[in-house]
Length: 246
Ligand SMILES: *Cc1c(COP(=O)(O)O)cnc(C)c1O
Image (tube, rainbow, N blue to C red; front, side, top):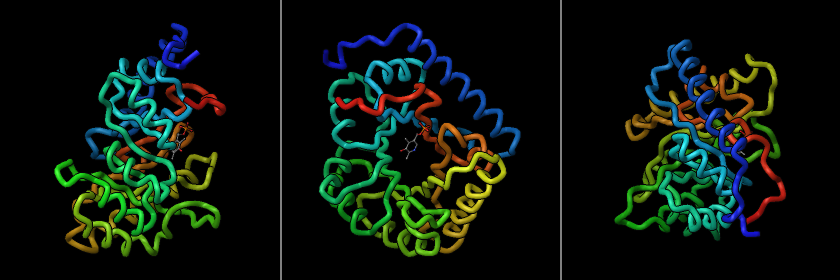
């Protein structure tokens, strides 16, 4: 049966709405207690592997932005969904996908090479709003992990701000998994520091305003350190179906 005909059970719809409500309250509480000034933290609902019914339930519960990792899956959902959320691309960007990504998304969180950034810029229509970009930083310098080395971030940032159809917004990280709250905070604090360093380094980078950090398991630590976008999948939707493709 096509996924568009599958109805989520009422209990799923209810639990998605309840999760969103609880996460929003939690984010607000942490933000206030940690004296973070961002007046609004963007709650990005990571919908990879989720059927569109669950996405509709999230939309009806007030979610305004969805994050997707795979272009084909995302484009199928865009076609099927009769709503107009802000779409964020958060997966690895392959060179041959840059045109479609630039055309269909408002944000790309995972830029780590100038070649990819310039292809995204070239793929964005001149009359469209600039594509919002975050540089993915390999903040823990893990050998097999995506992201630019922290020491190379300034050079990449300076190259990206020179491109016409992009608007560099800030940094995105996926730190090494830690269960301890203070260890989680440490990587996020270094990311916030890196953003500050960039802003102070050059006038062109002064307007950077985004820290895309924190997922279901570590979002309290990320918000404590100043996250402005948290990317939450399981915490909103429950466990995802790894085999689901649409
Ligand atoms: C899947 C994914 C998330 C969401 O992870 P959850 O543990 O489900 O909250 C966040 N960011 C990126 C880059 C992801 O790929």
